[in-house]
Image 1 (cartoon, rainbow, N blue to C red):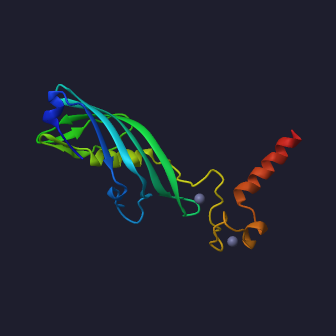
Image 2 (image 1 turned 135 degrees about the vertical axis):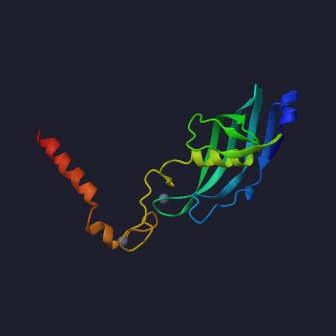
Image 3 (image 1 turned 120 degrees about the vertical axis):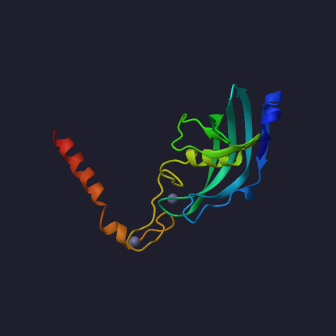
Amino acid sequence: MIVSLKDVRKGETQYRFSYPTSWWVREDEYDPVVGLSKPIDLEVEIRPVGARYILNGQIRTELILRCDRCLEEFRCPMHESFSLILKKADPLFELDKELKREELLEEVMEGEELDLDPVVREQVYLFLPMKCICREDCKGICPNCGRNLNQEECACTTKTAHPAFQVLKTLKVRGGKI
Ligand SMILES: [Zn+2]
Ligand SMILES: [Zn+2]
């Protein structure tokens, strides 16, 4: 979605856009966001401050993510606020190093137009949890037989516990003695 910065400077500062679910295209097969199960509702206020523009926005949507543990797809509601400062760099604009950004997002603004699409995409990635899991107690996939342990148990898991759990058991026992 393109915003005219001329309009912003004239006082048109409030914007609301809807991105259809088809808008999200996976970057590659490793993109953790498989798609959208609801359209993205973007509300943003853009204020000119000198040579800069301050963006305060809200994104509401529902993402389709792939679970890191069991590899199944699941839905994850997203309702996030964000703030950004954009400034003009000749001839393009550059984002200030600001808030939780790690990289500069260049070419967001060209001339008198601000393309909000890369901003939205970036915010979606920033929102993603470090570990994408479908639910707290997701059992994942058996490393031996590849079965989804949320759906069925397999013979391998009952025989050997994960080494980490063995350590925990030992610690518990020790703790009990003290
Ligand atoms: Zn899972
Ligand atoms: Zn197994």
